[in-house]
Amino acid sequence: MTPSARVQAAIELLDAIIASARDGGPAADTLIARYFKERRYAGSRDRRAVRDHVYDAIRRAADRPENGRAAMLGLAYARPEIAVLFDGSVHGPAPVEEGEAAAEAGVIPRWIAPLLAAPVEQDALLGRAPIDLRVNRLKAMVEQVAPLLPDAAPVPGVPGALRLPEGAPVEKSESWQQGLVEVQDAGSQLIAAACEARPGQTIVDLCAGAGGKTLALAAAMEGEGLLIAADTIRSRLARLSPRAERAGATFIQTLLLDQGHEGRALESLYGRVDVVLVDAPCSGTGTWRRNPEARWRLTQARLDRLVQEQARILDFAAPLLAPGGALIYATCALTDKEGRGQVETFLQRHDGWIAEPIALPLGRAHGPGWLLTPGHDGTDGFYFARLRRRP
Image 1 (cartoon, helix red, strand yellow):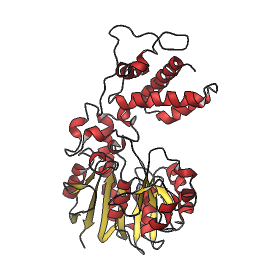
Image 2: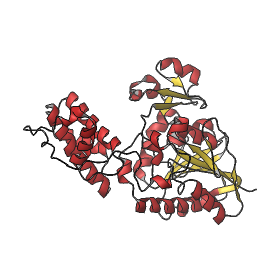
Image 3: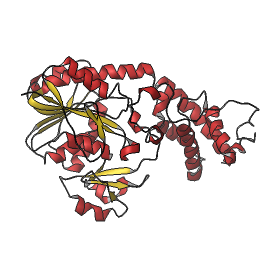
Image 4: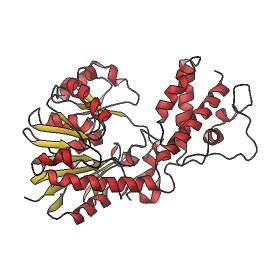
């Protein structure tokens, strides 16, 4: 492919990504993989260059562009070496017309900026994210694993965490293949630590997904007790089993819930659980540095639906707790509606609950909970709170 043809390919991919973001279709990575599967003539350098163009254009535009050409023109106006490739060649993009509109540069979509928690450093939300690892205490200690990963460095304030540069091939390492480490952002590891899991407890990870935090809880429990990973999506839970096997956490039980009727499967646990983790579905505003395309998918209507769903989950989670038990609410979102406001309204709806103070080496207090941000802490963005049911 010529350099101009690579730009045209990026435009075509961006057209598909923009439409998919608007309509709730497949993610950018999926669309890129499909595109090149149908174009075997593209070599590895071509694929890498096109992918870089696509993600540079995505990162640059906070609001969803009109089309792929507008997205790439925005990039071209900022980078002359790309602008000259709009040359009208056989497989390249048409020349730029005078005054042709381009996507505006920005970090935060205009509509959501006022909704972010006040302390959030907005310019840091699209910084490049490293790869964080959690050393699996069921199999090894950090002192044993660190020498096996010479490029890894400790994460200050997060015991058992190691950090690798962006793009490091973790899954090819023996440490990962043997279950000595799991890929998990340091902030996510701190959420698991805030659960204060102990051996012998009964713990439910209520929105477990593929089980990243479940595995961290399993390690803290040292393989002893009842740990249930619950979710409403079967395919997500299915991904947990091989991970648990690799990690030596085969005592984890999975529970498939019926969306909208979760209580039917949970009723036998009412009043018996020591810790419930609600890692709620959310806007993902704290993970934009890993998934910048998510900005183009989020709308006010979707955010409102998420806030309603978070409250509903909290309401059916609360009866699970035994007196004195802890409900940990967490989101990888940085809007106050999903964080501070969600916890405050829960406490208003439910008597007999208190928000416990949290003190961790990273982050800061924000309302009744704790806030982590990329700019302040070098982690993904999270809000979480530990709610205690009075004895």
